[in-house]
Length: 186
Image (tube, rainbow, N blue to C red; front, side, top):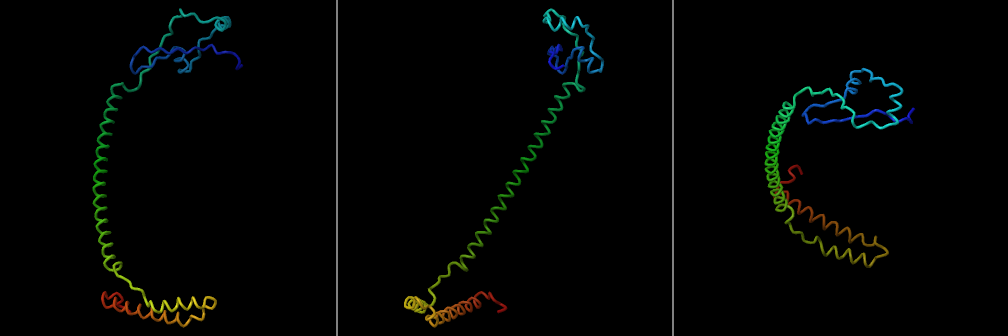
């Protein structure tokens, strides 16, 4: 069944008519649901064996026109492009406005950040720290060197160093409390 060649021919002719598609009579009959013209067995045999002569009369065509004329489609395209350009212009304006707002917010946030950094630097970073209890620290280090195998022998020196550090810490906190009133509930 599938090994025999098809004898169906398709011809496309364009007569440069804008918006019109022409189809052959056979295609029109098939679209309408009508059967093709019946060929006799002798015609089938001769058509398969011999090529079709070029002097064959052209088939008759039935024109097919789109439901809307070409000009209205062109007008619709132009209207669409006009609406598209208006919409694009509107969105570009909105984007520009948002960029301006974003720039203003960024500048405001940058100013606040700069002010906060300046405040932190004034209140916390610029404080200079001197070494705490350097004499006690040297005693602890010397004891650990002398008693490398028995570090618990240095517990008295470590205890004295910790007491010294606690005294200085309490003194610094009391100065801050008076200066900034940081700990109102303490």
